[in-house]
Image (cartoon, rainbow, N blue to C red; front, side, top):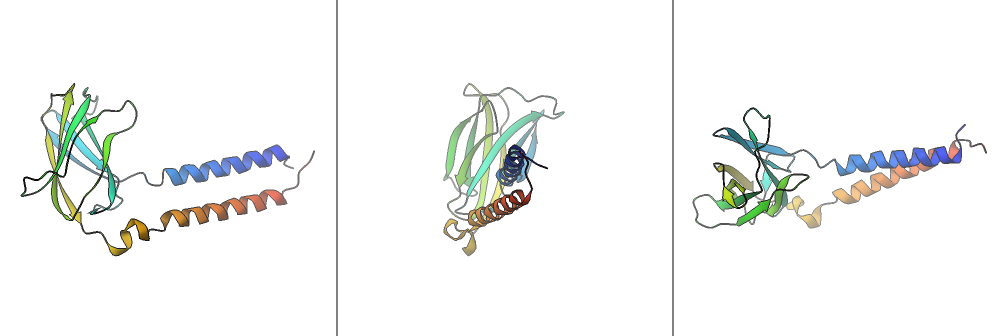
Length: 179
């Protein structure tokens, strides 16, 4: 038999597992890397498909490591630019500070489809200390169903969460308790 406290513990455990799964469900993504001198420079972006879509926010994280991946070179910031290929325009330029925890990155929305170049230069206290790397990016048109106004993903997640919560509550109510 299960007492009232045990029911509460089971409910909280199930809820926690559901929330952790949902919150980390957007992990993963794509990685592109380039070998430069003694280093490997990589750019991660949070797209489950290799395509980057115009008018959709995307998180980029940039990193650097030695080729043998035994240590990460010390840097304080990364100068990042994004520019369309065959153009002198720049759609993004910024100095991204390295965080103590988590990735060194930024969120960006490409204004339109096309071919772009992302350039990352790792710096220490504002001065370049490693070679920079450039990465080609192809941005495709936003699909009609992809616009933020047409997405129902979070609504579906809420409905699934409510159904799971009701099922757990029903299950816990049917378990006999003792005092």
